[in-house]
Image 1 (cartoon, rainbow, N blue to C red):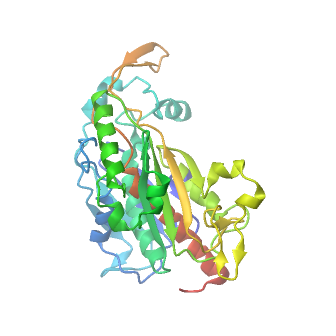
Image 2: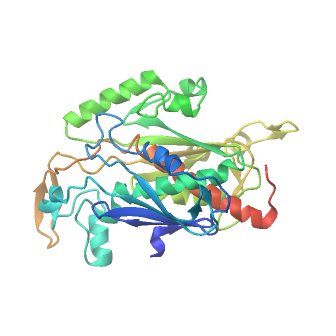
Length: 361
């Protein structure tokens, strides 16, 4: 199905359901000769597993990955790479009472109208469990972009109403180490503690929270991207919007640009380079060589234990209180998913650039 694939030269297709026997990804277009080990993929998968914080879902999946094809003696062969992750801790019985119920805020209604049926076992393909396959694919894409000197860093910028003050962000050297020093992937420990407190209060109230992820791309060569329908920013926004909890994507100063004058918004230049970066590292759909700045708005997790009004598949009104194992927020587990989608897009554009005018770093 076309809706389960992304990319042109570096093409990723994911498959599998939340409560099926397994899920995975097939990757086409990976160059031959890249070093690739299972441990590297599992290291990324560990970052999206529940259990990093007390407010996460108690579902325990080891997320062990097997490489079925495309790698020989630790190196990619250039042929399709097939990855599989078996589900070990699915409890479909938790959802039996919801067989005929439309859960508020979920994809149930749309799936029912599109296909005439739906997988009621935790959402099937619409479940956040599908993102494990994306993260596995992103680990491979990361090998491609690393060869060009590109680094992708994501972190929790805001959770609920708690946000890192901008002046604090400017004073932090954002590195993988400073971001991952706290389980919420928030580089400011004072803000992270406030976020944790809010998460605990929200769980006790049977509710959930949304949040904001910021993703930085460093070392992206200027010239990457396409000028019209596959602008780099358009592809990045589309890839990030394909993540289930994401409802907004902002690039550079984003909506703030709508309030500026051209004299304020333009990134002027000197012989030393750009003076500002309001555009977020992309102009005309093509990378400028500056840091690419992306922000992602995530809606609250829809599965909450508070009573909610809904209908069943026959249109009868119901009041439900959801059970099962659910996160209070998509953050921080969505951070590595966002990173993975950005890596996948960049890998695709790097390979496309190679067909136009490739310059190795």
